[in-house]
Image 1 (cartoon, one colour):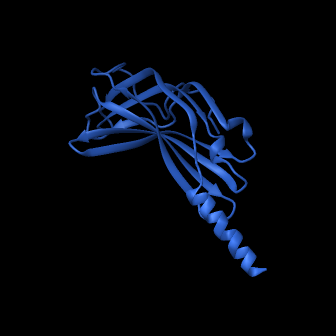
Image 2: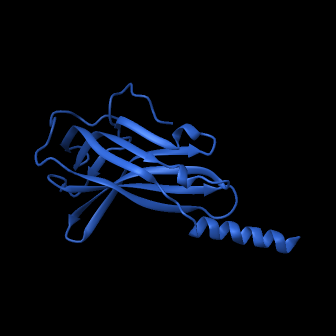
Length: 177
């Protein structure tokens, strides 16, 4: 009996660690750069934007998946060889929430401002990644990153007179969780 449980535990671990964690049919597009300013209060460049994201996440779910924590990460180089990564959006997807296995977000607002304390965002090429973390019911959890696209920051500030609000986007927007 104990040997069988050990064998099943080992199979579960190897399936989770070496099994396929595939995100299919991903598409990302930054659709609207609403604000890009030099925030004098925080002394940094700040941006807020909207994006479209399509992704089939069904390959991340199996019998042992409890929650998938999904993040959109923007990465740029601020000095030669030095990169900065900023989480701009995230979502928790429970196993029972099958309607979210296939994402189709249209004009979604970022949840966290895209900022740079080095003030070097103008004209930067920004790579965009989808990071997932799989919290299992039993055993270790797994994570991975999927390259989903890129965009170029404007070379000039946009809506310079606008001030940073508590959160990006309209104040009455619906949260995604």
